[in-house]
Image (tube, rainbow, N blue to C red; front, side):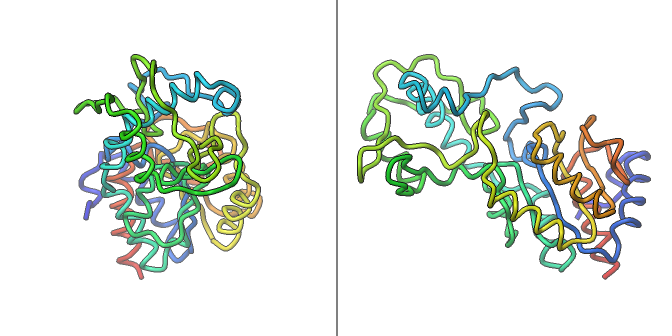
Length: 283
């Protein structure tokens, strides 16, 4: 387990302040893409992140050509995305929950790594790439099964050994010509990954679940999110209205730095390990 000795002086001091703030409290956790970068999944906005223009929900739903481009890129990236493993940060948060300190994880990520790390209460705000559903009949499919179908329908497609993944597990395809877009095997309707696209709103019931987790906690820990997405900022505001302390761990600025009780500008894996070690020792 990482100790504060693995961090620089400023981060070490900030971790110490965070431990003082969080000690004895039940902590809700909100995570973003920065938690998964050490698993090989890039961030949309982190330093060095490539400039990307994510597909919007309107594009996907209204354009067959756009859906074809999406499914080619998504399939090419799926194997690498699915092979990503939880890192020390995911494991530290799972340990924090098992110790009775964290009340659960609210995540903006769609990679499923918190679940695979052993976290039991995970609110996936933006959905998950593990599932695909039919927009017509509602049938749900496992993404692994769909990948088998895609390859059967497109035997010419080859998945490169080294792909430049996007945060949602896709790559930018060179061409989508001739690609057979998967359809619902029940009604032949349009399939869509079970994720919130740009231009879509987080489902009301999902946000309410996240709010309930914050309401049942005594503090909020934000890790690896720049809080550019409104759903994250709204949860920070909910915590502040209840006068809960807010600890933010993120490399670089976030939209809520001025509202944080403690801000730790450092890598999430190292900090989460250190926080978990220190808080568990105080139990």
